[in-house]
Structures are given as C-alpha cells and as structure tokens.
Image 1 (tube, rainbow, N blue to C red):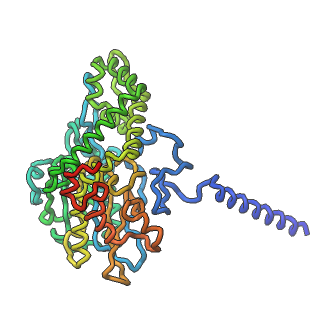
Image 2 (spheres, rainbow, N blue to C red):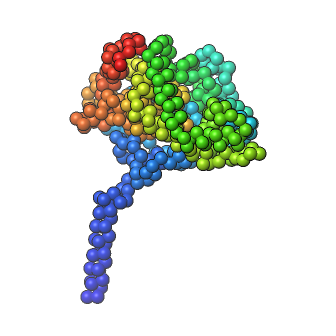
Image 3 (cartoon, one colour):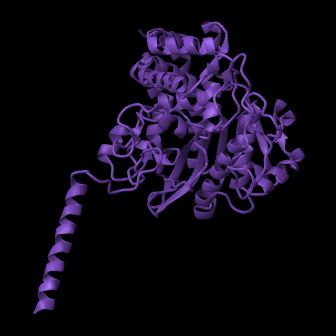
Length: 479
C-alpha cells in the first residue's frame, strides 16, 4: 500500500513538471529550438530577425562586432541543400565576401597592429587542411587566370601583414566554407561528378589578392587537390561585377545621394563628434584627419584579433571609443534600410550580376550541363547591394567570409519545372525576397519558382523607376 501511494505521488509530480514545461514553452519563457550565434532559428526558413530571447534588446556594438569578426570556433550547421527528396539539385551559385583582412586604413601616428600573415597550422584559428592548402597553392602555375590575377600571390605570406592582406583567420574561414559546401553539394547531392571538367565551373574574382586567395581557399576544400589545369579564373575589374554594363548615370546619382545621407546622419551625432575630438587629441592630429583615416577599420582589426587598441603619450584609444563609433555604424545601417536611396542604388548597381545569374540558370534549366558551380569572390560592397536589391532588408551587413548562395532545383515529379532557394550564411531567406514573399502565402513548396526570379530581374527591378529595362532605368529620373 505504501509503495502504491509513493508511486502515485511520483506520477503526480511528473505530470505537474510536464505541465509546467509545456506552459513555459507556450508562453515563450524558455526557447524550444536551438538558436545559432547569428540569432537565427535553424528550423525557420522565413526568419532572419534576431531572436529577442538570445540577443540584446537594443543595439549592442560589442555583440555585433563579434558576429562581424566571424572568428572560426564551432562547427557550423546550415540549411543549404535542403529540399523534398524528389527534387534534384542542378546548379549552385555562390557569392562570397573575402575573409578576415588587415586594415585598409591606418590611424595616423599610431603603431600598426602586429598581425602575422604567414600560414602556420599550429597557430589558432587553424584548419586540418591548412598545410595541404599551402602545398597545393605553391603548385598552381598551370592555372589559367585572367589579366593581372596570375601575378597575385595565391596565399598570404608576410610576417607582418600588408594593408588589406588576407590573414590566416581569413583563409581558415573559407576553408571552413568550402568544406561545409562540399559535404552538402558534392558528397550528398553529387552536383559535380568525379570526372568534372573546367566547363562545369565558373570562377570570377576582383583583382585583389584577398578575394583571389579567399576564392582559392574555398575551392580547395570544396574540391580537394583539384587539377590546376581545370581551373580558369576570370578577372572582374568592378566591385559590383557589372562587367560590360557599368554605364549607369542614375546609379551614380543615387550613390551620391546616399553618401549625403550618411554625412548628414554623422554630423547630427554630437556624441560621435565628441568621441572623434577626444581620439584626435590622443593621437595628436586634427579631428578631420582622424575621421578621414576611417579609424573603425583599424579598430575592428584590433578587436577581432584581440590586440590592444593604440596608445600614445597622450593616452589610449579604448573600448568606449570603439563602441561609440560602432554604434553609429549600426544606426547608419538601420537608417539606410529605412530610406530608399541605397535600395535604388542597389537595384541598378547589381542588375548586371543578377542578370548573368538568371541567364545561366535558364540555360541549365533548358538542359545545358555547363557552369554547374559558380563562385564569385567579392567584397562587402558587392554583397550588401545584392541583399538590398533582393529585398532582404533584415539581414546583417556582410561579415568577413559571408556567403550568399543561389540554388537551382528541378522538380523530379515535373521535370520541366525549376525552383530556386536563396541562403545567406546558411539560412534560407528565399521568402524574404521581394519577388517571392507573396508566393510563400499560397504555396506548399519550400522554394520559389524560377520564373518569378527571372521576371524580377528582367522587368520587376525597373518598375520603381517607371522603366521596363536597365538602359532606360539608368537614364530616367522617375522622382
């Protein structure tokens, strides 16, 4: 009898605990799904907003700076390659930002941060294939590279980094990216067969060593020990990849207006101005000269590499200075999304690149088996307008080694039908896009019809300019 009573009491307690757990989850007092460091729920393909349960409710410049640094630490999970079993992956287009780099600007009269740009596998962060990558890069003389690319080093090698040079962290970031994409696209989906040839790849990079090296790092772990004779890398002179369609006066007009907006926001920020004045006194230069040296670029390098901020006989630049400038940067990004100037610029700036992507997808949908894997190695000023033009306004500014992926799928039940998925840093943002938000409300499929992407790029991008084509939109003032 005693045993039975105890059993009933324990049963009642278990039921009570289960009820409380369900209640807490229902009331959102505890999270029910794991949330990644980017603040995104891996089970939701529609969200890219930060999760208020795991992220600061207001702007936290230190938190955002850590995300921007993107220092490799844990194995990344991603949503690339997810589709119903009867869908076949037929092509993948990847747009990356280069990895972590040494600053492009120096704060006058301060010591440069001492960052070693040689590649040493025993130094963190590292990667199991780092040594093999260096060996393979030293054998790359047979690769075909356009223009000045062949004269660029294939991996960083200076004991004291040069301005803008890719660091070991930057190399490792893209070794991780390539390994992750290989697991999904090569091993799981067999996008490229073991006897792939040069015609199956399209590789393009700007003429900076950091973008070439980032692309090669990703490519190495994506296709380990690849045959250099199969590699043909195109040189893109423009950071917006506009190729032969760069003549666009209105694009330049909107960019100038956007720069005026940035200036106006800055001069209204008295806290920011006092911070610049204080820093200028520490360094011993005029405030205008300090501002022109873009100190946040150098300070981010100190922050990402855990190097002390610069000091002089007049004092030290400190974390509070950094937080003020970084906070203003984040506020500027927020206002940029609210205003339309950057959006208008982005539509015109990035149309040639999206048009090239659409044309390639259409050829593959028609049965062509060329350029199945496309890699563009680019900059933040490339990815940022692409995100804006697509309408993915809630995405964070491109971090080091950010990746934007376009997947093209064929419906196995209806082979003539093709669909796309768009993923940003591993998270599905397809239904964040301007051209597929409405479709999401009426479709049971987790993808967007290719036709909607094609129509958006060929015509929809110009509707806000009261035009039907790129040439007219570039020359017409609609407002």
